[in-house]
Image (cartoon, rainbow, N blue to C red; front, side):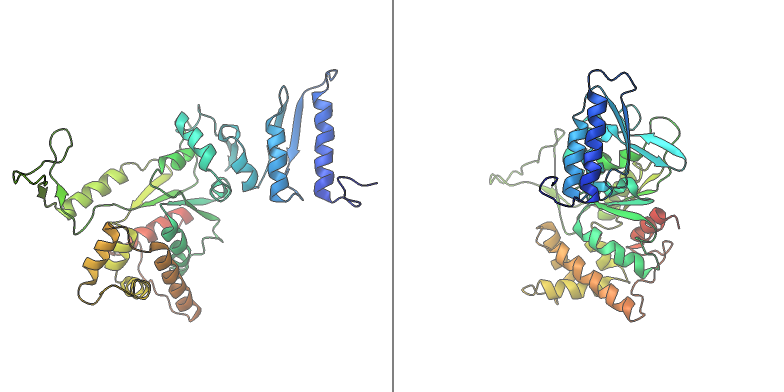
Length: 344
């Protein structure tokens, strides 16, 4: 006798068979008891694909209530967010619309984009939300360089791939007490460009053409320092409760690393070795700015090379990054975010 072609079925197959048998009891028409199923650690002995199959079947059940406990980001990514309850610090936090500060459209968004990698945020002791791959690659190495192991601290780095942080950050903000205490650090660029003139605009926000008759536009120089400070102030105002924002003090991550005394050498070496066809010797800063403006900078490759260099130095007993969060350095915002997320 075999089960699904398996002469000796494994524990995962037997677990699924047991759950199916119990569902038959709960769904039969002459069942007079409570139609409630409790499943502890449903993912036990199931490979990820099997977990997905089981949870899809369970979510289609009607007229019965199912309560599951799990430590699986696979299952968390497949469940509807409003059906999740996060247990933390002796409190339970339902993720339904009436409880969180997420908008209804956020739920639709997260159902599409909350994949297995991002869903590990539900199980973390601290969370760092970042814009892209460069930050995700660099942060673990930078953390180790300042003496912090993010894995040991139970901190998850979640790369959202854009700047729409509210979709994720508001998961942790509640409409009423008790509030969540999991520290959430949001690292973002201030995005005020250097080496860039700004178009003059009219009261309707449209560019103003000049009077040359050549369909050209007028430009006005901007005070970069002032505009950057305004941007940073606006970003910091988004901080609320356990969700705190950490904006780059100059333009982007890469530009801040170039301006930093700790990482400028690492960044310049990586950029020069990857963009070999560019004249970096005449004016490195201007060339870097032009590549950032034209979106020609290979950020992921550069981040990977810098992270490797930091790790190699650590293996030799050398800490490349020696700044603290109180240091007036352009990458201290990264140190502050790491310390906040890890509770230091």
